[in-house]
Amino acid sequence: MSSVCAFVLTRNRKELLAECVRALLAQTHPVDAVIVLDNASTDGTEEHLRAAGLLDDARVRFERREVNTGGAGGYREGVRLGIEAGRDWIWLMDDDAEPREDALATLLGAADQRDAAVCSAVVHPNGDIDLQHRCRMGRFIVPLPESAYAPGRREEVECASFVGLLMRTPAARASGLPIAEFFIGYDDAEYSLRLREHGRIRLVPESEILHKVPIGGGGAATRRARFFNARFGLTYAPVPWEAFWRDLYRVRNFMWIKRDASPAEFALLTTGYLAKSLMYDPQPLRRLPWIVRFARKGRRGDWSAPTPAEWAAR
Image (cartoon, rainbow, N blue to C red; front, top):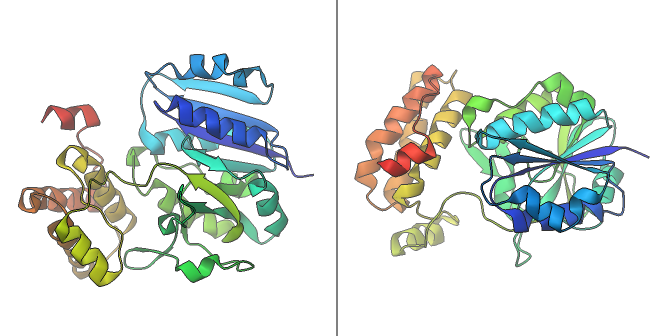
């Protein structure tokens, strides 16, 4: 029987985390270890898990870091800890994820030796598929179509989020660790591209993982956003100014992934981000200089950026 180490990254979502850990411990194919990494929470996460009795299970290991290193830094540490655990597979997920009880068994049953990783379908609480988690890399990152989720399909994935990604440990070891400097945004896409050098990543639609908090920092849909979404079949939401720092990290990180693009393609990619802000965001003209600046940072490999606290102070 294949051995599996599950890894969960958490910060200040203790109730959701407890639901995730319970779901991991209830899998029909048992997990051998569950590593929870608390990325500097301030909500009493460890005490909550202890009071719920979840830390009494010998399979659960709780780790805490005193500095918030973002999703990228957290998953870098998680992959490292998963490799050190020495199991056959490493199963990654966020604290707001809840795998169905047969999710792991279904993934393992679908994997073959050519796979570096397999991944679940990510679904919203209402049961709809969240297409943003399984993608292809073109000029931009493009979600797989809904047809890829038909039962029995085993579509290859080029960019997979860390929500429900099950990796062979040797492939993870050969791929190295996620880039901590990304902090948040596209760290999973960049890592997926490296992971694919050691085998396929395939989607297993019959394996489902519930994701309770949507990707991104989107606000309430505006009339402008609803118009463009309806016209182009998109699902974007406007990003409030207080969350705009996340978009800047994403622009920088994506441009780093595309750092070898020609000047013309770099200009085209930057224009795409500018156009998206004009189409969706409140006060877009205030944002455009920031987007250009962070696109250039990504191309140069300049990781400097305001922290969330520094952005809030603005």
